[in-house]
Image (cartoon, rainbow, N blue to C red; front, side, top):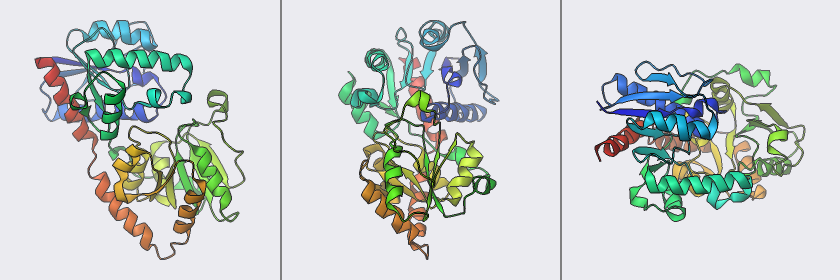
Length: 360
């Protein structure tokens, strides 16, 4: 039986969208393996000190002594050379040809100003090498077009395996609303770390345009300014809460009590939070980033990423939705959108891609 070796270095990294994707795809592959739906043996390879996943059918092996990219390029590459490599988190070993690598977006090439110069140089070089050697997968039709434009690979050769949102279809922690001193329907929510691309600044400016005290803004995510700098943010006022990172149940609880999720990203390869909001019956106000419009379609209301006046108008529109008619319309459309995206479906797409690579 052929073997597929999953790159588990993402389990040494803080969880953001890329790591969430990798974790949920591995979990879905584990379920497929339990159903006998995988034609190969799957093994998760991790560096020392990695988190563990509760897998029942996929074996986990800790290998090597290195860390970071060195582990990728040496320890993982050596072990994965015995079969097919599956790398889910933007990077992989350049020496291997039998591999599928998920590159989530072209943010490094399109917005290099959002990253350090060494990071841009490293990933620009790495992405181009991987595109020549590996089968490239990505998470949206938008990212397929973007990667085909900036890398030496044809769009038809890029596999699309989108994100899902089943992970937030869980029992919510409704008590988080009271713990944060909030009232149901009295706040808007954002999710994302404090980076320029996540564009929290526009949400803060929009909130400042509303009548003082009419609503609060809860910005969930890593907010360590020593790491991310100011990200161009105005100082948060009394109506802004920065609770830091929260667990999935707390996020689900906040979504179910929020007036809406605000998703103001400047650039996304996909954007999971709007799907998570739809799962938890939370309307979405989203930027016009093309991938976000691809995912949300008519289920969200849109504003240009730097247009705080339009965002403030949309926020007020939801605050004035006293009979809930607008909310019900958006939630019905959201249910239709979220039904299109599942982790299991995307895991099967990647498994099929690995099978084709192994058979070449």
